[in-house]
Image: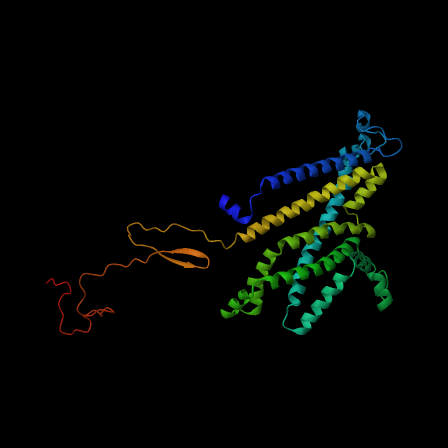
Length: 363
């Protein structure tokens, strides 16, 4: 293990270790100062008179500040979670999960379409991807909500013929925008696979579709898993834009709660912590999937049963290293051969018509 570490990087010397200690101490000090400024700011320290920092009263909880218990007490009531937090969280996860599945399908279809051999499929897919990737997400959500008005103005369809819900508008906007970004991610992943993979697939007679779905796409998804998860995290956070079209997602629920209880800062902190927890969970799931996919195809070495066989195993050395080959054990030949039996290949006496006796000289 130590030899491997010495190959990867040089061991730091005394001066480098001293610098690392100094940088660590400076970082910790700045972090503590940032927390102190945050605490004092929400404690209304910077308003009016500013007492000394060494005064214990400075660090006491200010009743008019944001750390007072009255502003955090609503989150200890069950009704706050059942009436505001959990319904908003459910709507956020519903929109995010639905849009994630649709965006992945959208990205696969149009990402593969941009690599099609037919020019009309390639051009059409590229136009769709570039169009929706260049439009802001908020405009896509607004345009989806305004589809009844657009249908009335273009095709004279009565306004009450169909309606677009806030959930449908949010999911449509998230799918079109993030699906266009994922299309480029999938295309980059497929193009990053070595060309020898495709050439080997063509050599064994696989079609282009088989090569794409069985060889290129699995490797591309495994390689681009971090980028895919990062885009899904962006999708989850962008679902908060549903607040603009009155979609009852989590941010809107916390906004209503903060307006009712007058605790904007505590509500924002709790909402941010929930978003962070969801995104970290999604990242951990992605890491698990990446490790699981990377572990596929690994061969496990099993001991060869050589009981009763005293033969030396041959070894063949290639680009990947030395591979042990199980020895081939030949069965012993019978002592005598039938007179009417076929001649064994390579036998010197097979063509001797006059020698019909036993080969070992026994009568």
